[in-house]
Length: 226
Image (cartoon, rainbow, N blue to C red; front, side, top):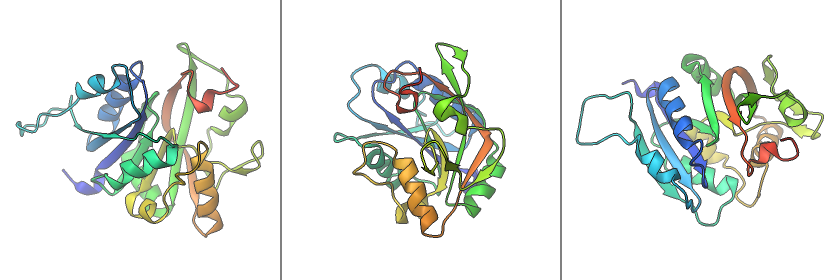
């Protein structure tokens, strides 16, 4: 296994039993050399037991593509930034992939993504909104997820730089020096992008990194849209 192609995948959870298994399976299918860090905020449902189904047995050296290394971390005083920074600090690999627990990875070009995160401070991907099993029209916030690449995306809707951590990729070494703001209760990705760009960095939107983003009642991206 070439460590240069390995990814540490960070997934934040709180009562995500409906989709967590689909999310993890999609990572195993599309990012074969990975570890997955579940950063959990007091789940009371089957989220963690479902995640454990995918845990590779360390007593066996043979490679089984149906399993992976699962590291479960706990965060009590949740903010998006605090949870992400915890995962980043515990990540084994230099390549970081952040994905929402109710997203399912559909397309991921590892070689292209590695080239992009070697050039840009952060890269985020395309999202297809799925409401009760049906693809819905990309309006409101979803209209940012177009089919063309864009550097330093600026949102006329929000009047600020746009970035989205439902599916995003970075270098760990960069994030350690430019962590997410732990005081924010939301939009940590937009404020991170603003600070990075205003200090000479750059971000990139790659529509070929693709997820289905499934509706959840607590999903911030869905507020006012569902």
